[in-house]
Amino acid sequence: KQKTAYEIYQCDWSSDVCSSDLDWGGDTPCVEVSAKTGDGIAKLLDVVLLVADIVETKARATGMGRGVVIESHLDTGKGPIVTLLVQEGEVHPGDWVIAGSSYGKIRTMEDYKGQKIKTAGPSMPAVVSGLKSLPDFGNWFEQVESEKEAKDWVSRQDRKRSFKSVVSVKS
Image (cartoon, rainbow, N blue to C red; front, side, top):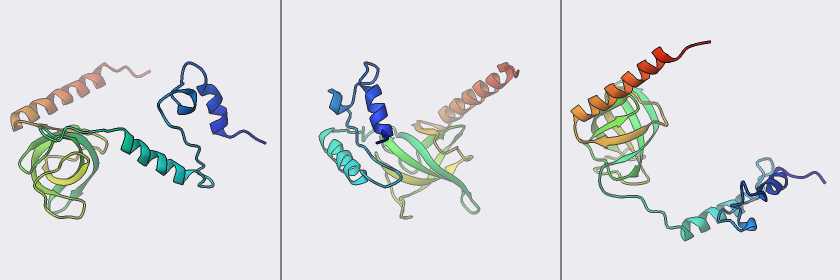
């Protein structure tokens, strides 16, 4: 019988370098799954739900919002539309946010169904408008106190980027 990738890597995990698997006395569950056949998917989902119940992960639900940009596009009538996934704190319409090299004041905020919302908290996606330009998806966003603070942060990032491009030597 040919060894599966799981069996091959499990032998490597027995070394001191990676011994976090539960079978080896660690605290990380490993589940054998197959993308080809779909075997083990149900067990993987069970383990994910079990870990979610056991490990109490809590995000800070108050204060300045921060998270990640998961989508952005340009709408003809509204301008840049950005989907933010809030990971900590809260964001509201009227808040100033920075995302990548963009910033703006949140003009409108909707949930994933298109319904207007007044607050977006942890693990909640929010579709917002009001940013000056389109940030890249995957950029971190952070709420700031004022437009001045947002402009200063973006200009510092632009200076860093331009300095790196001048300093980098192409071979």
